[in-house]
Length: 229
Image (cartoon, rainbow, N blue to C red):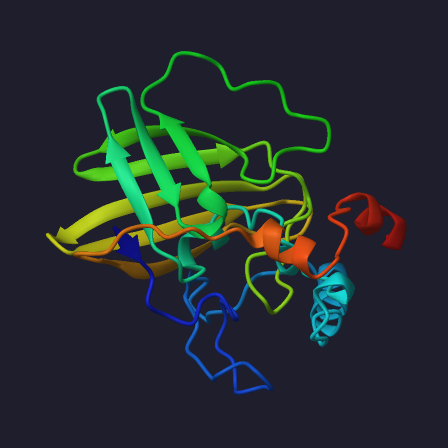
């Protein structure tokens, strides 16, 4: 089992304390200033996204994750819930506690990526390879609905993520993700963090959608999202 013990889920950039959000250092290592390289016109959308999170009612939140929609990649990695990595010669499978999600990554596959779904996929489509002892996963074919964190940092359907999982020792992985999206950012940018092995634990049941049902909240995304836009 692996887990990210950090504050990346709140904001990938350096940030001060806010209501419900502890202060924390950022995880952007490229550019060197630690800032996400947004196009000027994209910054207004990020600000609007963040303003829409200032509610305790998940049905009113602008963050799709608050409504139990899949958080996408790389956000799933640093949500704070543990996940398992299973390896075979043909593929690597990530099994996440959150929503029981499984992600199967074919290794050195000659099979082309499936056609992009109408609107794209929440977790994208992935292909993997090994570079020395590092696992490199290229993910494309995303939809435009997921965010990178709770601060409203976002992307379009042109997103490509290249993940790199590098063993540092028996109990530590270095995780890097290089993010490219020419519709939103002026250049590719990279985050870096460590993942720690969690011994003597298992994956628990986590039914996010069931909790929404208990609250009487209709699971209507992305229809309501499109209407808001």
